Amino acid sequence: MGEVSLIDVSKRFVLRVGNETQTVQALSRVSFTVRDGEIISLIGPSGCGKTTALRIAMGLEIATAGRVTVDGREVKGCGHDRGMVFQHAELLPWLTAMQNVMFGLEMKGMRGSELRDTTEKYLDLVGLGASKHRRPHQLSGGMQQRVGIARALAIDPKVLLMDEPFGALDAQTRETMQEELLQIHVRTRKTILFVTHDLDEAVLIADRIVIMREGRIQEMLQVPLPRPRGDLGVARSTKEFAETRYHVWKALHAAPTGTIH
Amino acid sequence: MAQIVDTNTRTQGQDIASVARRGVPQWVITLSSVAILTLLWEWFGRDINPVFGSYPSAIAEAFWDLAQSGKLAAATFESLRPFAVGYGLAILFGVPFGLFIGRYRVAEAALGIYVTAGYAMPLVALVPLLVLWLGLGFAVKAAVVFLMSVFPICINTWLGATAVPKSLIEVGKSFVAPNTVILRRIILPATLPYIMAGIRLAVGRAVVAMVIAEFFTTISGLGAIIINSANNFDTATMFVPIVVLMVMAIGLNGLIGVIERRVAPWQAEIAGRDQE
Image (cartoon, rainbow over all chains, first blue to last red; front, side):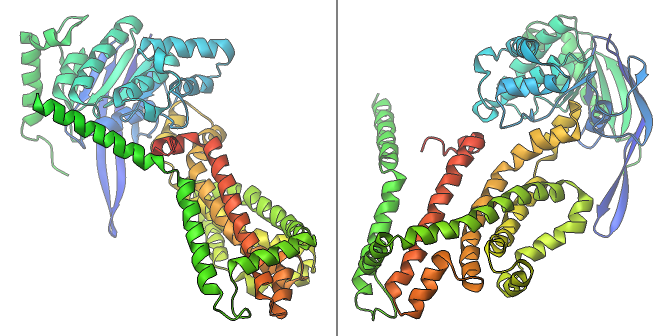
């Protein structure tokens, strides 16, 4: 099981601009549930609160109001039940790919041969078995993010939280990574909450899309593409993809409904 | 076809150029620079009255006399003991203290100001007071070296600890690492290049402090040779300990560089210095 829910989550930031303090309502009563084994894309323009929502789900940020539950149990702070994949991989530069994956596992208390075997298993899963002794700067951006994914998956979390993980990659690498992520999903059946600002990516990856605007959920919709999606080039050419993409595009370009802060 | 040939030639040309650039090792350039400077000094130094200045061959002669009599080795050893103790303590104390004020806001606000002020402290003026507290012997010399070198180490570590990207600390947090583990396994390695820079900067200050201490407390060690020969207008002999100290500082700096590449190899790799 792995189900993560945000329930009435609100977040207010206090910003200091010059001598004035401004409060920014980053999230207002956001509620949604990522069901077991499901992938949800969280999309919206920058500043809409999608990353804040993800960070609150991870426990890196504390909600002003509302709560986060994993399998119905309220969580406070970070936990091994959730694995985070960061936007720029955020590997520790002094550790090799293997040691980076081991870091997460060691924090979970794993030692000895189990630690080594699990690390190698997940590096193989992301296709990096051959480069495991390289340090991050000796890896390409795509490879770095694979290590980031392996590190998060290795601790066997109930939920994988991904913060624009492919946003910094070139278009071709990004497409490869999207396909690989879906293959990994087929194998591991992890629940995934995926933040992106890329329209195509949101549709290709997700079962459902949550569109956010100004800290609120504007719309939730189902993606009618069947799973497994296999070749994403083929998935892109379907009528369902085009329709869903257009629908989300319209939603993102609609006149703002709320007040502008 | 012509174009392809062109490209090939250019690539080859670049290869040759880069080989040529790598061809002259750095130490050869450094040694040539030292040789040229020494020759120039010798050339112009001989024209100066030997009381007002000296030149390399005279200094070498004085060095030989001092070394022969065993005075130089004894003095160097005498100087090195307080130096090693003071400098070692400065590292042992400065690094943890810098990490502490760099990572805890309250500590930074409460104690940072003393570190900043201490760095600019006119230590020479305080030596008489230190003598009253610690006497004229070994302890006061080690204390002067410590006080001169602890601040650059501490300030650099502090600066490094505040410069650790928040995102790397969040990696630790998201894998539920305890604070002590985050400090030891994320903040410390991320700060290491800054720490090493501080330790390097402190070498120079520690050497100066050592000589100051020998001037103003019991006159001893290399500092004593400087003072005594200056009083006898024996300028060439006066230069011997100065040169010895500078060479020692260069050696120590090199040693720190070696240690740095050992403990933080990724730093040199990222900067592309590892092949040189």
